[in-house]
Length: 361
Image (tube, rainbow, N blue to C red; front, side, top):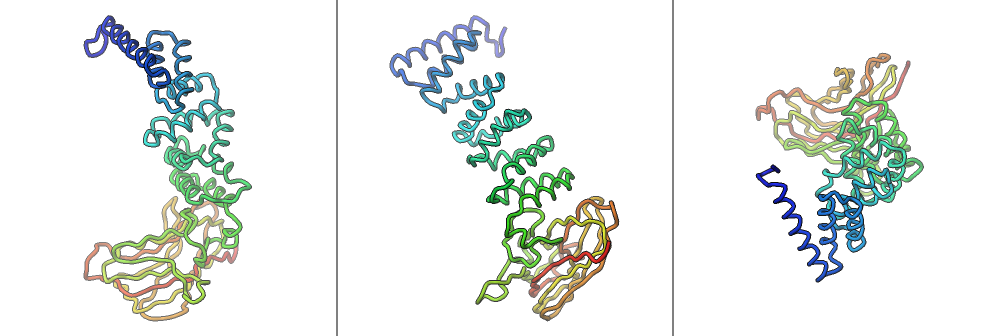
């Protein structure tokens, strides 16, 4: 007895009926790819693999996006280790049915684990198909595949102009989530373009000359209900120098979403921050801090003074002991625990430079 009460005899009868429908369709519409794909499925169910494969090939010759034939020939290509054919069919499938990407993405991971499959996939991805970012994000989110994303990013961006920094940023975030800190920082360094390198230091883009690229080792900032955060020109007339402007809106502020990951070798450091303020009211404080993220602990903090001032410089000294921490993060914070309107933050803070100087080993 088959599933749902269907007998073997019933199943054969249904197959025969479908076969008649498919053949009748072909008689009236001989270029109907769907009918050939259906006949291929029937022959496959009957155990006639060679005939089924031939029918699938005919279907794809008539329409390269015929779904049944495309899926069956994809499976056949993988079985035969015909990586070029497999990637070609996946490319067609992802372009035609992007919503079904997650169904077939694991096939790419499987192919990438083989030398021939990796080289073929790399060549296809280098041509920038529309599903490239989607695939890399899939690999980024899978702990078992993040190594593939890392390798692909190095190969895709080595000796080339970097055109997709946010795509690289997704892989960097995946590596950091998986505590692969050295690989993350190495990938960041090896994918810096010429402009990036001009703004490189222990703090990247410390003068905010570049727009945020979406990479964890660059600035990440986002406005929240109590504070608007934006990168703006210091002098609107020339637009050459920039600062990060935080405008507090008279509301409680528990979190200030400004930060950047840092890679710091052991040694003594000086943290220097240039700031301006206008009517800055900080009822529960505001501070800039550097934390070790694994194991989590604070290594440096600078308190931001309230009030009005221009061209102020804040400074802090700290030490990074050898082999204690693999990765750090610069961030802003407050001491507000509960968002009570008794503690309304207001005024403007502008940060025009953040720098770290290594002062000793």
